[in-house]
Length: 179
Image (cartoon, rainbow, N blue to C red; front, side):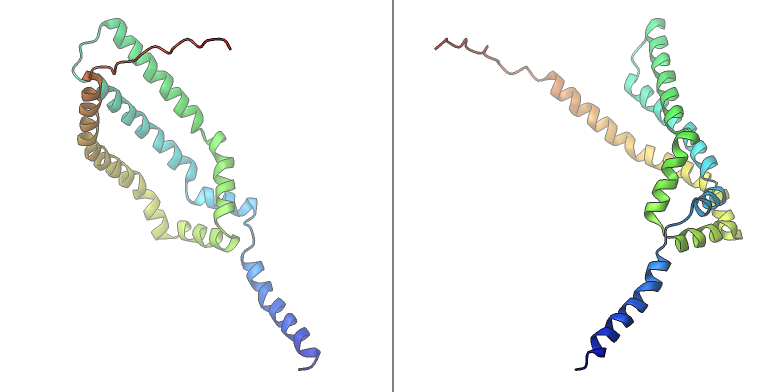
């Protein structure tokens, strides 16, 4: 085996590795921005908020059940719902979420991936997917909520059973004697 042979192998390996490094390049901020626009990320995020608020209202209604509430109690529930909605809207505001989206996209996709995904979203099929995604999500949310109703009822029944159990007998701790 000649000395040139190991050097030639290293050179060949390096030459083969360079395209892999180039292909795995991190997407630029401009690439990410173009993808976020093409994918309508901001409007998709904005569409989630009312759906989350509707789910929260349903959860509050389920928690309250048929319990009669005084006007004061009802006002307190509405105040809590409004505060919850405010927190959700603030947390999911695009100004808060955009940097998170950009970081996650950069961590997840290569420059080539981002460009290909952007190209898809700019295609007729991609635009069609984006146009129908809100209806798809609404239909999924409704289906998931319907599936969760029996589970929530079962959980409430279990919680009721636990709350009706007598408390275990507790013996007070013994005072320690000083040594």
